Image 1 (cartoon, helix red, strand yellow):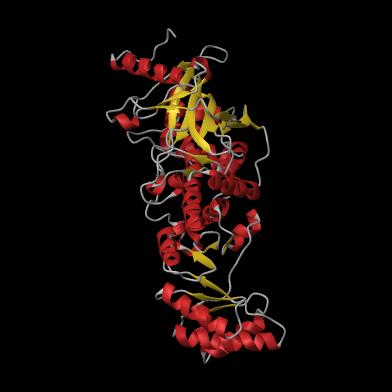
Image 2 (cartoon, rainbow, N blue to C red):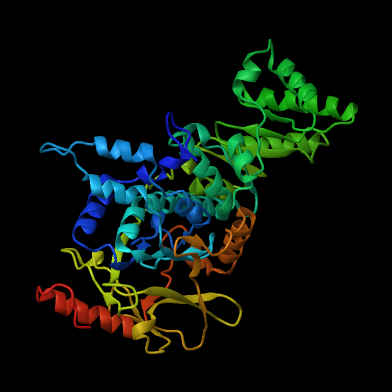
Length: 495
């Protein structure tokens, strides 16, 4: 959904980097229209120096494919783009090819909300090389940010120890579409609600909000403001205490809570948005308990993140819920996942053998994994994941060993564990093969996956490494291709 001025849902095909289109024209002119390709989207390092990532965004991929068309207006715009050296950038016949274009890709991905780890395919795309290339930017735009937000939220939820987290980040998000993505991904990552009303309408996420400091400042006194809000919202009454002085705010809230009791209503909670949250919430809890108002909950906000929340509980803060805004919406301190989309195999024409390809790079950590990849996740008898194996069926040796994806001197033995295939097909030849899971199912999947993950992998400081390796046949293929390419020969077309 586009919220910016002058955009339409039919502009999806233009939500791309220009070089995707220039390469598409080059493939078309080079006679590679029938060449098939396999691309994998993946990330090289876990975000936030953590031990995992929560995959998110897959639920919207099929919609992206459905809407990826070039309308007459789109073609007219592309025809108007000048080449830097003069003339039109795109040729007329290529634009006519795009006018009749429809995606014919097949796509596999793990279920939304599932945990992923570095170098594993978070999306695998197969199809005509032009189609695959045109999809790159839009697909990464969809997956990278939502995966980052869902992971950040999961970390915050872990720190909150079962207490409710609400997404308060809309006003600090990167634009309207960014705010919607934050609300959706944070809910899948474990948030209980959002302040974003539009997200509530679109995605069915519970919405939450009460009043701001301006409400209190608009009345002669804080007590007047509290009383007015209690009259207006008796079933949704959470009072913000720190407009002037929290100590007096506690007294005024207790007064209003007693008045609400007398009229048959109840004050739901109080919120503190500044100051020493540990100290002030303890004071508030003691005062409300002594007043016989132990049912009144305490909520906290004010630039919170997983580390602050963890610290508050370490100090014994009696907080029942949190509103997390800026640092959730902006994924502080890591604003980007760094996910990439790399070619791993080509097929000169449908039905011919696949030729695996590899990118070596001047930096070894950027070396890619070749082949048609999928993931086997190995679980122990109690359902705890022990590690993952990246597999290419064409070279699969049937081994339960795995060679580390970065350090070939390290290997893992999964012989005592039971494998499960992680990727599932969501699009076949441009047509969705299944309806996406609801965000409630994705949220539940994320919660269950985190529940079964080793706590040492979930910890924030120096998390334990989760084993990810290549099935030995794929490791050998990668080694052989590396040696071949280092001789400067290019793709081995004799395979």
